[in-house]
Image 1 (cartoon, helix red, strand yellow):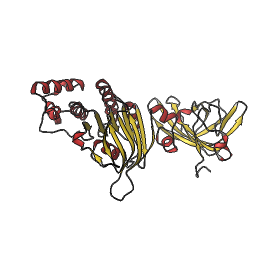
Image 2 (cartoon, rainbow, N blue to C red):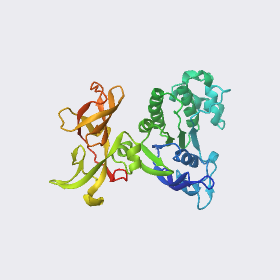
Image 3 (cartoon, rainbow, N blue to C red):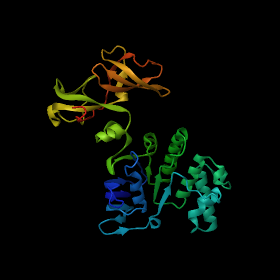
Image 4 (cartoon, rainbow, N blue to C red):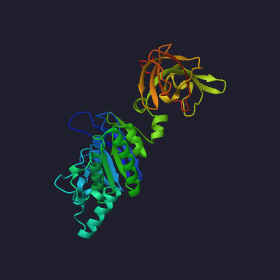
Length: 359
């Protein structure tokens, strides 16, 4: 692995650890993303990798070099780690031109080589035409591209990005996320990215880590996080869905899960009935597991609806009182309070121990 974290901890004073026991790895050229709620420790972990915080436990290795080790006291200063950083607020120098901002970390190069590198970086981010302009003359998205070009110009061995798009509007964030991924892949840059936005994480990351209360709950690709969440927190944090009471039982062809919407039979990777007391469990039902079907004998009342353009996100209540969610094409414009037919169509069955609330 190019970037390796082993049982890393970060602590501020006597307070509860900001980061505790985090282990992860990134191969050369991979893009990793850390997501989680505010205060979960993702930025503290990024700062530890950067060398801006000392580790209170564990070890960090970059390209085979130990840059932090709590046991031996090793702490390579941030400026000696050959790491590039991109921040939320761009941190551009307002008194310098776009080209001079990009050239700022290239003072060690001869003038001609420095000029070529600046030109190459500006062309890479699509702003070759803006070299002589001032940062304030550019849009927010263009300024963030300049910050990216400046961070990549010295050819860092690792790039860290801390919520780089959070001050931009939603549409621009999505476009820029795809563009930044393309640029990083083109340059073969290994990067670790922090965001609170799931769609942004999915657009950028090869591998994504979900953090909660200073711990890494799961480090996996987006598909696995959504369809095979390792913990109840990940299941709840990623995507739309609910936990419904269920029971794992013996069926004619093996095992199945009895749910309020009917039986589920795709039991790959699911526990056996004796994994839970009496087979009682909670099953994760994603909004895309629930299909609107007027012919279905199972009916549900629409409690809430959110228009999403091509679809509605319905919150539905079954006659038994359980609630589920469903993505429904927007031309099926039913009213709140209306009863509609639904059926379950789940390719991935994910179960967890029954929660106290559901017991």
